[in-house]
Image (cartoon, rainbow, N blue to C red; front, side):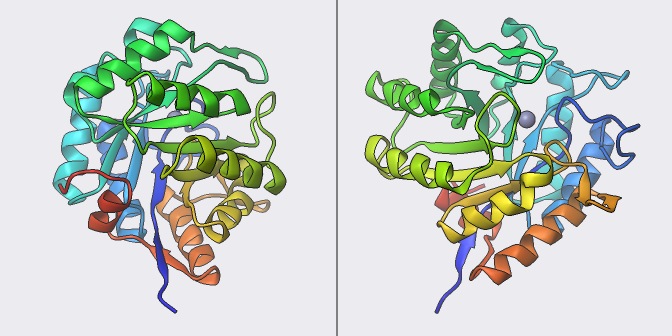
Length: 277
Ligand code: ZN
Protein backbone atom coordinates (compact mmCIF):
# COMPACT_ATOMS: atom_id res chain seq x y z
CA UNK A 1 0.00 0.00 0.00
CA UNK A 2 1.37 3.41 -0.88
CA UNK A 3 1.41 5.96 1.88
CA UNK A 4 -0.67 9.03 1.09
CA UNK A 5 1.23 12.29 1.60
CA UNK A 6 -0.02 14.70 4.24
CA UNK A 7 0.67 18.42 4.26
CA UNK A 8 1.98 19.38 7.70
CA UNK A 9 1.35 23.02 8.49
CA UNK A 10 3.35 24.70 11.22
CA UNK A 11 1.90 27.75 12.97
CA UNK A 12 5.14 29.04 14.37
CA UNK A 13 4.18 32.06 16.47
CA UNK A 14 0.53 33.13 16.66
CA UNK A 15 -0.59 36.21 18.50
CA UNK A 16 -0.94 34.85 22.01
CA UNK A 17 1.91 32.77 23.44
CA UNK A 18 4.79 34.84 24.78
CA UNK A 19 8.34 33.89 25.52
CA UNK A 20 7.37 33.83 29.19
CA UNK A 21 4.86 31.05 28.32
CA UNK A 22 7.46 29.12 26.36
CA UNK A 23 10.91 30.56 25.55
CA UNK A 24 10.88 28.63 22.24
CA UNK A 25 8.17 30.91 20.74
CA UNK A 26 9.94 32.73 17.87
CA UNK A 27 9.22 36.45 17.90
CA UNK A 28 11.74 38.38 15.79
CA UNK A 29 11.85 37.75 12.03
CA UNK A 30 15.29 36.11 12.42
CA UNK A 31 13.95 33.75 15.09
CA UNK A 32 10.87 33.03 12.97
CA UNK A 33 12.93 32.13 9.90
CA UNK A 34 15.25 29.91 11.95
CA UNK A 35 12.34 28.16 13.66
CA UNK A 36 10.57 27.67 10.31
CA UNK A 37 13.71 26.23 8.77
CA UNK A 38 14.02 23.64 11.55
CA UNK A 39 10.33 22.77 11.16
CA UNK A 40 10.76 22.45 7.38
CA UNK A 41 13.69 20.07 7.86
CA UNK A 42 11.51 18.06 10.25
CA UNK A 43 8.74 17.67 7.62
CA UNK A 44 6.52 20.77 7.65
CA UNK A 45 5.71 22.15 4.18
CA UNK A 46 3.40 25.05 5.02
CA UNK A 47 4.19 27.86 7.44
CA UNK A 48 1.43 30.00 8.98
CA UNK A 49 2.83 33.37 9.95
CA UNK A 50 1.87 36.07 12.44
CA UNK A 51 4.37 38.81 13.17
CA UNK A 52 5.11 40.50 16.50
CA UNK A 53 6.05 44.00 17.45
CA UNK A 54 9.29 44.46 19.44
CA UNK A 55 7.23 44.30 22.69
CA UNK A 56 5.86 40.91 21.52
CA UNK A 57 2.35 42.25 20.90
CA UNK A 58 0.58 41.10 17.72
CA UNK A 59 1.97 43.05 14.77
CA UNK A 60 0.72 44.13 11.38
CA UNK A 61 3.78 45.82 9.90
CA UNK A 62 4.14 44.58 6.31
CA UNK A 63 7.92 45.04 6.59
CA UNK A 64 8.01 42.27 9.20
CA UNK A 65 5.96 39.93 7.00
CA UNK A 66 8.27 40.73 4.11
CA UNK A 67 11.37 39.79 6.09
CA UNK A 68 9.92 36.49 7.24
CA UNK A 69 8.67 35.60 3.75
CA UNK A 70 12.03 36.45 2.20
CA UNK A 71 13.89 34.32 4.73
CA UNK A 72 11.54 31.36 4.35
CA UNK A 73 11.74 31.48 0.54
CA UNK A 74 15.52 31.56 0.75
CA UNK A 75 16.06 28.85 3.36
CA UNK A 76 13.06 26.54 2.82
CA UNK A 77 12.78 25.93 -0.95
CA UNK A 78 9.20 25.43 -2.05
CA UNK A 79 7.65 25.76 1.39
CA UNK A 80 4.14 27.26 1.24
CA UNK A 81 3.99 30.69 2.87
CA UNK A 82 0.69 31.55 4.50
CA UNK A 83 0.05 34.90 6.21
CA UNK A 84 -2.49 35.22 8.98
CA UNK A 85 -5.16 37.86 8.55
CA UNK A 86 -6.39 37.04 12.06
CA UNK A 87 -7.86 39.74 14.19
CA UNK A 88 -6.44 39.72 17.67
CA UNK A 89 -4.87 43.08 18.42
CA UNK A 90 -5.25 44.30 14.86
CA UNK A 91 -7.65 46.76 13.32
CA UNK A 92 -9.70 45.52 10.36
CA UNK A 93 -7.91 47.80 7.92
CA UNK A 94 -4.54 46.39 8.97
CA UNK A 95 -5.50 42.75 8.68
CA UNK A 96 -4.96 42.54 4.92
CA UNK A 97 -2.41 45.34 4.65
CA UNK A 98 0.46 42.92 3.86
CA UNK A 99 -1.31 40.98 1.09
CA UNK A 100 0.45 43.06 -1.57
CA UNK A 101 3.48 40.88 -0.72
CA UNK A 102 1.63 38.03 -2.44
CA UNK A 103 2.21 35.07 -0.14
CA UNK A 104 1.08 31.72 -1.55
CA UNK A 105 -1.84 31.65 0.87
CA UNK A 106 -3.56 33.70 3.55
CA UNK A 107 -6.06 32.78 6.22
CA UNK A 108 -9.66 33.87 5.74
CA UNK A 109 -12.13 33.39 8.60
CA UNK A 110 -15.58 33.16 7.01
CA UNK A 111 -17.62 34.30 10.00
CA UNK A 112 -17.54 35.71 13.51
CA UNK A 113 -17.29 33.65 16.66
CA UNK A 114 -17.02 34.08 20.42
CA UNK A 115 -13.69 33.12 21.93
CA UNK A 116 -13.32 32.75 25.70
CA UNK A 117 -12.96 36.45 26.40
CA UNK A 118 -13.48 38.26 23.09
CA UNK A 119 -15.47 38.32 19.88
CA UNK A 120 -13.48 37.33 16.80
CA UNK A 121 -15.19 39.77 14.49
CA UNK A 122 -15.45 39.03 10.79
CA UNK A 123 -18.41 41.00 9.44
CA UNK A 124 -19.82 39.96 6.03
CA UNK A 125 -18.54 43.03 4.14
CA UNK A 126 -15.07 42.60 5.63
CA UNK A 127 -14.94 38.92 4.58
CA UNK A 128 -15.92 39.94 1.04
CA UNK A 129 -13.21 42.62 0.88
CA UNK A 130 -10.50 40.23 2.05
CA UNK A 131 -11.69 37.43 -0.28
CA UNK A 132 -11.76 39.79 -3.25
CA UNK A 133 -8.31 41.11 -2.47
CA UNK A 134 -6.91 37.55 -2.31
CA UNK A 135 -8.67 36.62 -5.54
CA UNK A 136 -7.20 39.60 -7.38
CA UNK A 137 -3.71 38.93 -6.05
CA UNK A 138 -3.92 35.20 -6.78
CA UNK A 139 -3.43 34.29 -3.11
CA UNK A 140 -5.18 31.07 -2.15
CA UNK A 141 -7.26 31.52 0.98
CA UNK A 142 -7.32 28.97 3.75
CA UNK A 143 -10.90 29.25 4.98
CA UNK A 144 -10.72 29.10 8.76
CA UNK A 145 -13.85 27.41 10.06
CA UNK A 146 -14.45 27.85 13.77
CA UNK A 147 -18.11 26.92 13.57
CA UNK A 148 -20.67 25.26 11.31
CA UNK A 149 -22.08 28.38 9.63
CA UNK A 150 -18.63 29.31 8.35
CA UNK A 151 -18.65 26.27 6.07
CA UNK A 152 -21.81 27.47 4.31
CA UNK A 153 -20.45 31.01 4.22
CA UNK A 154 -17.43 29.64 2.34
CA UNK A 155 -19.75 27.87 -0.11
CA UNK A 156 -21.59 31.16 -0.59
CA UNK A 157 -18.29 32.91 -1.43
CA UNK A 158 -17.71 30.30 -4.15
CA UNK A 159 -21.25 30.81 -5.46
CA UNK A 160 -20.69 34.57 -5.64
CA UNK A 161 -17.37 34.19 -7.46
CA UNK A 162 -15.25 35.51 -4.58
CA UNK A 163 -13.56 32.19 -3.83
CA UNK A 164 -12.15 29.80 -6.42
CA UNK A 165 -13.30 26.19 -6.43
CA UNK A 166 -12.06 23.90 -5.02
CA UNK A 167 -11.02 25.83 -1.91
CA UNK A 168 -8.89 24.74 1.02
CA UNK A 169 -10.53 24.78 4.43
CA UNK A 170 -9.31 24.37 7.98
CA UNK A 171 -11.46 23.08 10.79
CA UNK A 172 -10.29 24.67 14.02
CA UNK A 173 -11.28 22.58 17.03
CA UNK A 174 -10.96 22.94 20.76
CA UNK A 175 -11.23 26.71 21.29
CA UNK A 176 -13.60 27.52 24.14
CA UNK A 177 -16.71 29.20 22.72
CA UNK A 178 -16.22 27.65 19.27
CA UNK A 179 -16.17 24.11 17.85
CA UNK A 180 -15.25 21.45 20.43
CA UNK A 181 -12.65 18.81 19.58
CA UNK A 182 -14.98 15.88 18.92
CA UNK A 183 -14.45 13.34 16.18
CA UNK A 184 -18.19 13.12 15.47
CA UNK A 185 -18.21 16.84 14.68
CA UNK A 186 -15.20 16.57 12.37
CA UNK A 187 -16.81 13.68 10.50
CA UNK A 188 -20.03 15.67 10.11
CA UNK A 189 -18.16 18.77 8.92
CA UNK A 190 -16.27 16.70 6.32
CA UNK A 191 -19.44 15.14 4.96
CA UNK A 192 -21.12 18.55 4.72
CA UNK A 193 -17.97 20.00 3.13
CA UNK A 194 -18.02 17.28 0.48
CA UNK A 195 -21.64 18.18 -0.28
CA UNK A 196 -21.30 21.96 -0.49
CA UNK A 197 -17.64 22.41 -1.50
CA UNK A 198 -16.93 19.45 -3.81
CA UNK A 199 -13.23 18.77 -4.26
CA UNK A 200 -12.19 20.93 -1.33
CA UNK A 201 -9.02 19.98 0.52
CA UNK A 202 -8.92 20.27 4.29
CA UNK A 203 -6.82 20.47 7.40
CA UNK A 204 -7.94 20.00 10.98
CA UNK A 205 -6.22 21.95 13.73
CA UNK A 206 -6.67 20.98 17.37
CA UNK A 207 -5.83 23.58 19.95
CA UNK A 208 -3.70 22.94 23.05
CA UNK A 209 -4.06 19.44 24.50
CA UNK A 210 -6.30 18.44 21.58
CA UNK A 211 -3.56 18.92 19.00
CA UNK A 212 -2.32 15.36 18.55
CA UNK A 213 -5.73 13.73 18.90
CA UNK A 214 -7.23 15.97 16.20
CA UNK A 215 -4.19 15.39 13.96
CA UNK A 216 -4.73 11.66 14.31
CA UNK A 217 -8.38 11.96 13.22
CA UNK A 218 -7.38 14.19 10.30
CA UNK A 219 -4.80 11.70 9.09
CA UNK A 220 -7.22 8.77 9.40
CA UNK A 221 -9.95 10.66 7.56
CA UNK A 222 -7.71 11.68 4.66
CA UNK A 223 -7.02 15.29 5.59
CA UNK A 224 -3.93 17.31 6.37
CA UNK A 225 -2.77 18.51 9.75
CA UNK A 226 -1.37 21.48 11.62
CA UNK A 227 0.87 21.85 14.61
CA UNK A 228 3.06 24.55 16.09
CA UNK A 229 3.52 26.76 19.10
CA UNK A 230 0.66 29.09 18.08
CA UNK A 231 -1.84 26.35 18.92
CA UNK A 232 0.01 24.37 21.52
CA UNK A 233 3.07 25.24 23.61
CA UNK A 234 3.41 21.79 25.18
CA UNK A 235 5.06 18.60 23.99
CA UNK A 236 2.93 16.64 26.45
CA UNK A 237 1.43 17.11 29.92
CA UNK A 238 4.87 16.87 31.48
CA UNK A 239 6.82 19.50 29.60
CA UNK A 240 6.82 22.44 27.22
CA UNK A 241 7.73 21.86 23.57
CA UNK A 242 11.40 22.59 22.91
CA UNK A 243 10.69 24.00 19.44
CA UNK A 244 8.27 24.06 16.54
CA UNK A 245 10.41 21.35 14.95
CA UNK A 246 9.88 19.06 17.93
CA UNK A 247 6.11 19.36 17.50
CA UNK A 248 6.44 18.67 13.77
CA UNK A 249 8.49 15.54 14.48
CA UNK A 250 5.79 14.32 16.82
CA UNK A 251 3.20 14.79 14.03
CA UNK A 252 5.47 12.97 11.56
CA UNK A 253 5.43 10.02 13.99
CA UNK A 254 1.63 10.16 14.12
CA UNK A 255 1.61 10.13 10.29
CA UNK A 256 3.65 6.94 10.21
CA UNK A 257 1.23 5.21 12.56
CA UNK A 258 -1.71 6.08 10.27
CA UNK A 259 -0.30 5.06 6.91
CA UNK A 260 0.64 8.61 5.92
CA UNK A 261 3.94 10.35 5.25
CA UNK A 262 4.85 14.03 5.16
CA UNK A 263 4.36 15.54 1.71
CA UNK A 264 7.36 17.07 -0.03
CA UNK A 265 7.08 20.78 -0.73
CA UNK A 266 6.32 20.08 -4.39
CA UNK A 267 3.62 17.56 -3.45
CA UNK A 268 2.13 19.96 -0.92
CA UNK A 269 1.78 22.61 -3.62
CA UNK A 270 0.17 20.17 -6.00
CA UNK A 271 -2.21 18.82 -3.33
CA UNK A 272 -3.41 22.31 -2.43
CA UNK A 273 -3.63 23.46 -6.04
CA UNK A 274 -0.79 25.98 -5.85
CA UNK A 275 1.66 26.72 -8.59
CA UNK A 276 5.18 25.27 -8.28
CA UNK A 277 7.66 27.46 -6.40
ZN1 ZN B 1 -2.90 32.07 13.31
